[in-house]
Image (cartoon, rainbow, N blue to C red; front, top):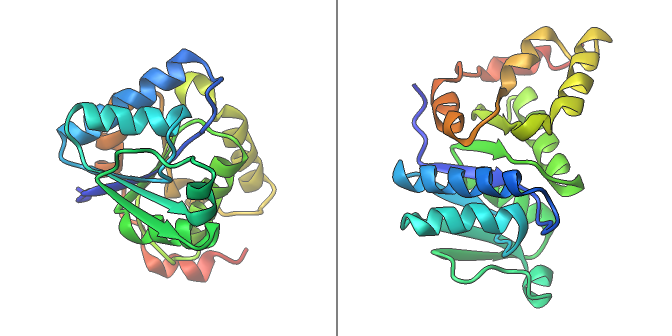
Amino acid sequence: MNTINRIGVYASSSTQVRKRFFSESYRLGELMAQAGIELVYGAGAVGLMGAIADGADSKHGRVIGVIPQFMVDEGWCREPLSERIVTESMHERKATIARMSDAFVALPGGIGTAEELLECMTWKQLGLHVKPIVLLNTDGYYDPLLTWLDKMVEEKMVREVHRQMYAVVSSAEEVIPALRSMKPWDRSVRKIAQI
């Protein structure tokens, strides 16, 4: 069983998404706090980013926000946070979240969330980290991405074993058990990263 003390979460900052995305995000924050798991995320105040932080706060969880200075200047940083880490760049922000987290969860999101998730998966494929990754596939949101990932395997862009880099769940209640039970990933996979 994987020991999970902090989860890095990637999520939408849109305020216009469907209510179920908000409720599942809020619920995951609650569940993390109840399990004593700290939230590490991009410090956003609104959208699903805000919802998961609000959920964690509601159960007295620890919320760590990592945000570049330009976003602070724009007024996009959530207050309050248990801890705020201000970075110089987006690259530093992503590296900090990755370094601090024991596992990663992608909630529904846009281009930024997709970029963060795929980079995290790339690093795992290369053996740069071996941490569990879960996609919270609320209402089938990630189905098109999963179809594309299947196509990558079919077309020999990635190997079949790379399907084991991540797990897919459909509800907030399934996230923590999935992270804890994921099969360990071996750094030796680097040798098979090249097809």
